[in-house]
Length: 555
Image 1 (tube, helix red, strand yellow):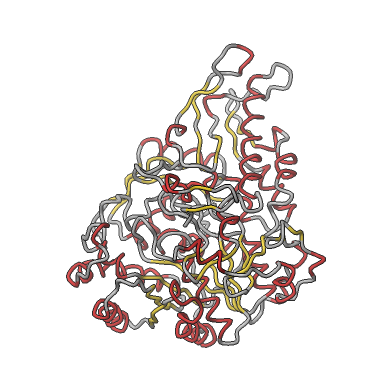
Image 2: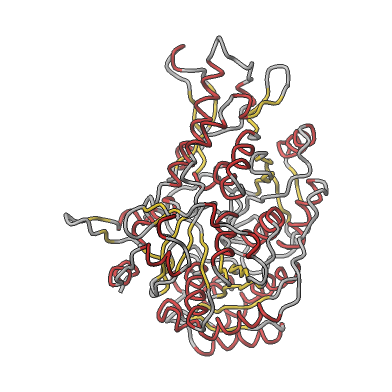
């Protein structure tokens, strides 16, 4: 059966029952229908964090379809609950871009899903819509101020870096001109669109720790310069109050359920290749307040989402992860060994061995952070015992424990061994997270540390625009901010064609965007775009709905 067919067979429990199971008074939650709810921030209690276990799930460099981090995260949570642990999965919200593009939805798969999968994948509780509107409100106020003759801040439109956003893959909107149509239609200028998952408002929502913090961060958004070179921020436009009002409900984490009736929190959805790649601090802290084991995931490979999880989110929020689970698949290693995507279902020991260097590098990266690693082999039906054994032998050689996760087919039952292993590691590991860099280092030193230590780069090449951006960051006094690298997820390098474990490559930094509200800077490397495009045959072509409202083709 397809994922959506499996999901429809499940008899969902009212979300009020899930709340009770979690120890939440149902009268305190805001219902969004029968099976979704918003959780009040008052449920977060840092005094309950002691002795709790935060587990990060990441992956090796993925194939275009992904390697199942969300599926493994959900399955591991089901398995932990089956062995008597109070566990909760805390995930990001899906973006419509991948849903209608190439990757599909982000609610897991098979018998390891969060539900209701159709609602979660399509609009959910409106958080993305609110983020999009708050972002575009600032864009409208910027253009209005440029046009105004009575309240102008003397903003130079040539310096405005704030684009608009929408939650859809649309390459035609990357570079546009606004303000055409005469004097009543604004001032013509070049701008463009990013995808909502890359919005600084998304980043702010996911890093804010209170409503006061949210409003302050919104006010700190850098807009551009006046004609006399004075920097302007969103607070100068008096935009942050209205923007925060639009996020009144979006700041609250969302409660849903897994296939096996366990609680799940889903909140925020930044991509990891062009944004910070992890769910909100509020959602993670909510999970730690309500359960003993919190399983969370960071987007794409360990070089992207996990690095940002540790160096940005954990440092910012004071989070102390107990373990990290690295998802590996046979097909991804064969892909990195040179096999075509269309051939990955075929056994190929030589390709597997050729690609295993990618796994080695990611394990090496895990050890950079001084965390206790676990390998979860996400099993596909086409995997052979011989292929799995090769990976097991490599993990044993590297001194890293591994278990097979058969969660797509078996749900929590397929993760029992993994759950036992992870809980044991959490309870016995004495290592403490060691960030890769100090925020107070220079921007160049932070970028080069990530590129050399995590990617394996030999050198960094800063393009002329990036050099100008470094100077601007220094002038604005923002050198102390952490780094959120924008880089292809397809390779450890910034070149998507360099698969496996590339060496002696140069990372090219094209430009460096400022996200002063979120509290980081974004080096743009290689050819990465912050507005993706659709593939030749997008997933949208297969999605339909009948007269009874039944959706097909969603996965």
